[in-house]
Length: 480
Image (cartoon, rainbow, N blue to C red; front, side, top):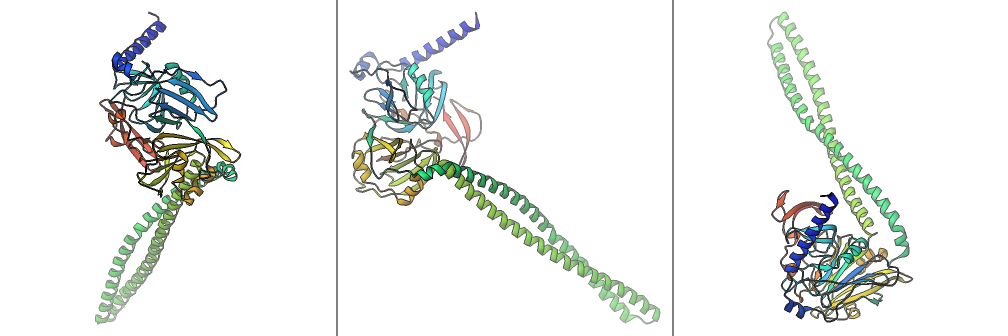
């Protein structure tokens, strides 16, 4: 059989098998009829040139995903979300990984093409069969062609909002939203480059200081032994000199006196020579110990500078990324992330802290004459977006750090919820609505809860080692 035919048949078999497995997990026809939306969503493309996607909003109620660029919606398609008991969680997520040809070994090698992961435990958008109602195990299935188109347009970090009902971004403006500074934005790239060079120079200097401190410590370590040896020899020489002095005093004949005087002179010269060597050794030892102490201080200073310049370079580099801010009524804290990295966490005051505030996502869609053009999306009961924003006051020192370089795709999330367990140093903010079913999350164990002890396979999962700005860690991931 020709190679092309063999590959095609295998591909067809896998696709049919995967589809059969997934369809087997769907509800019965009666259950489907109950879940089906009367107005079935259809695929659509905006009749204009589209920009890069900024956010995708999934409506669990309408079983539809809508993708937005800076100027409005650009793509729409039906979806199939999680079945009862394995519901797709409603909340705020972002794309954390993309895999063009993903297969699951948790669900009989089911094909999940154009997979865009939004939690490390296995919730994702991907191509799949759409029976017309919720049918997945927590993922968001999209039409195969649509998933492929979307995969080619999205970037890691794109916001994914999963709403229990229909939601859409509406134009929003408020003086409390971040207002960038044109001069700071212009200077940011050069500043990041300069600080990166300074950090590299500081790292090199710290390495050189470490080498010098090691050598100085090694030299200083040998000095006391040399002093102790000379002290021992000097003590023996002094004893010999004392003995010759006693011999001279006890001499009776001129011959004995001459012999004793000769021995005394030699002993005195030896003692004096060893005394001079001992003093020189003590001076040298002190100099080496002082040099070692100075080298140690220099190393400490160099390491401090390395740390400070590395942090400054990191912050300058992150300032080139959109800023994401999350304010939680539950924890009464404000969190800031840039490029998936946590940069700020501070307490914050919220007016009427016992009153629900809802969940609102404010997104900077594009630059505008006044700074940035914003939209707001509300996905949970509580205040409306403006009232929610009025109840919080971002500390001025935080605004001074983040607002000057705020760019399109920057965001502010206000929610009653705390950061979800799925959030870690390799995600943006993950906010899950706890008043909505989330069985699809409940059956998955978050990656940060499963620390691997070594490398290799772990049943139906795999281990990976990551190094982040706050240290390295090994994690076990359940495959799905």
